[in-house]
Image 1 (tube, rainbow, N blue to C red):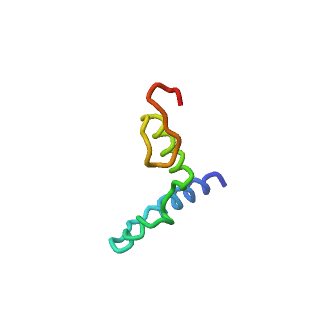
Image 2 (image 1 turned 90 degrees about the vertical axis):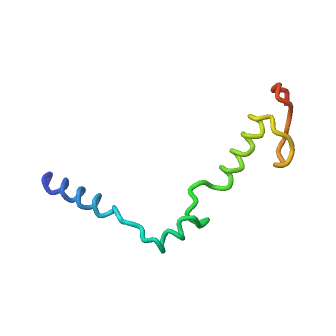
Image 3 (image 1 turned 60 degrees about the vertical axis):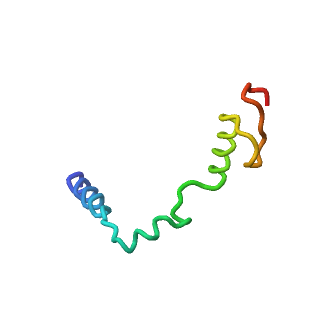
Length: 69
């Protein structure tokens, strides 16, 4: 049984390697293919605002560069 499991795992792992056709690459940039969620993107933007002491246009809280928000 043990000698049978290793070849099955090997065959399954090799069968998952697929070359993507040129006409299928159009769909890789779709919103459904995005791994990050909007909440994660919002969190990163908010973190960037605080980190860089950026002002204004993102709708988040802003403060000075001294850390006294």
